Image (cartoon, rainbow, N blue to C red):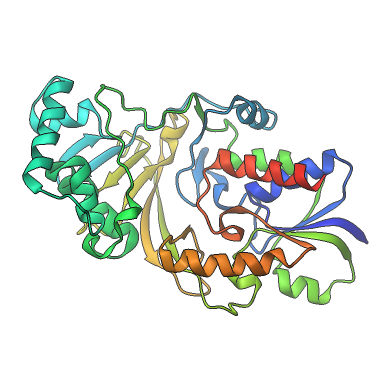
Length: 366
């Protein structure tokens, strides 16, 4: 057969692009090396609970057009992301807000909180932050940094904060209101039927081949394609000719607790001590206000990435930015290949931005 597009990756970027092309009358074949569609937003039922297999995914956007767009494919609930941070036996609200400051310092007013932070910053005398630690201290002071930033960040990156560049934290959101809503976006929620069902509707009757590696497939297929959309790792596409880009990986440890209705009382609890090996525990039923008699939890462990591991986060440093620029130049020379998504474009995308980028790419193609 001849297809207008071969789409490599059945995640959110690939599914959005496939939908747009199908609406325009184009033919697409979607392949994915995994055994399921939906990429990292894949959800599956366990004990009648939608389990987010690859970490918590809360859809949020301030773009009404994007919100209306995703509502074509799913009904969303009214979940509001309000994570809790646990430092030893102390619990704090996130993002940093008046509830956090009241618990930290026993204060009650925004003026008191602002003065406490300003006082700690003044005592540090940091004028030119040389690393992430100094940058964070110069923004929020000692208490917030030590209890809620330092250990969590070091686990995420696998390095001491003193060894991380300052530009990683350009700003830290501090709210002087009693508001635990993590996102400022107007629209927020999670698909009532789960993300897998949403992506399935986006793909519709587009042909999908799972457990299919791109290079093996193109080497043995007799099908032809007008163009390819590649959403995998851009450095892998070019056989790492210029070297490996840097990524961070994750390991998920999921446990079904039969007969335990409520494990932690919140969808997401972050563990901010470095000594605790995981960064957070997700209790999936709370994303959907579940009342099931059992519960499912997932512990999330950051991990070093090596070839063959799943790359979850691009590591943005000046060195990787320079290397990606070289790969990007090589990509532009491939007139019959498009590169999209967090791995194809080597940047972190929230879900709304993923959809917007895929729709824009489709519009440019059409």
